[in-house]
Image (cartoon, rainbow, N blue to C red; front, side, top):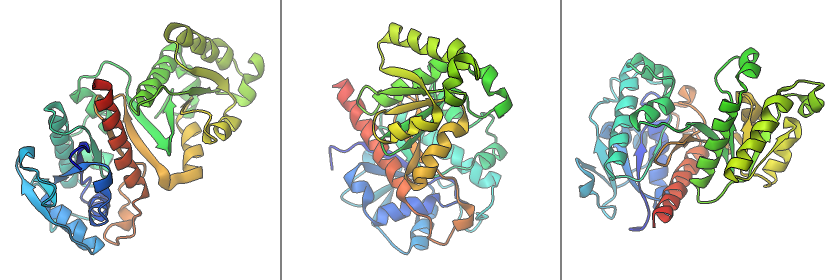
Length: 336
């Protein structure tokens, strides 16, 4: 176990299922195969999660990571900011949102200090975080600002070994075409390359078309002719990356899911989301693509309707832990 990466495991939003997910994996001893975990959050919420899932594990409070001894049990970096008696479960509120931000800030500083190699987090609630003072669009933008990123970043959706990266994201469908530019597509391709390499290999990247039948040579839309294909050709010529396309989106995922590609660059949000979630929603995770440290979470949200019932499945969170571990090990190998 001494060779496994040291990873932060953040409890997530206290009003949601995050503490239960973290606790359930501790009880099943899942972390032991992938990392040396450090639980980050309020000790009382971790113990609340254990109570909900009906289990218990040896654990102890630390104030610094130098105090970690995994043979003793699970070290908990106690933030002392959430009283289970004051949490309003199943609802977004500023009290829990403030803890989400505190957990993030703590993990960010631990990464910068070299004390953890990355982290996985239970689902946060964006609305609660905004109630507590978050001014960024999402936790991914918050991370990018904290790490002073100047390179592309975005949430990357992943199912098994297949990743999707978006050229456009949270904008109306009516605005998609105008935002398919060479700059945006280049950034998406670069993000796919960076994230693919973070798993220790050179990714095979496929770029989806926007229009039906790949635009039919400009007869059914000109985005493929005017922007997408020329941009792919320029990127390949300049970088040598393994990028191809555009491919008709209605058939691209058949070959991608068969293992022909590692990354699919989509033109808009649901073009990739529907494909992955339809095939294997419980197997999907969200990777913080482009960040300087391995970071991931489950693809689902806080699941307010399942809080306190111990019925939330851990498949996605398990895969997030495994993914961050893989990235951390690949990062070590790259430095060696």
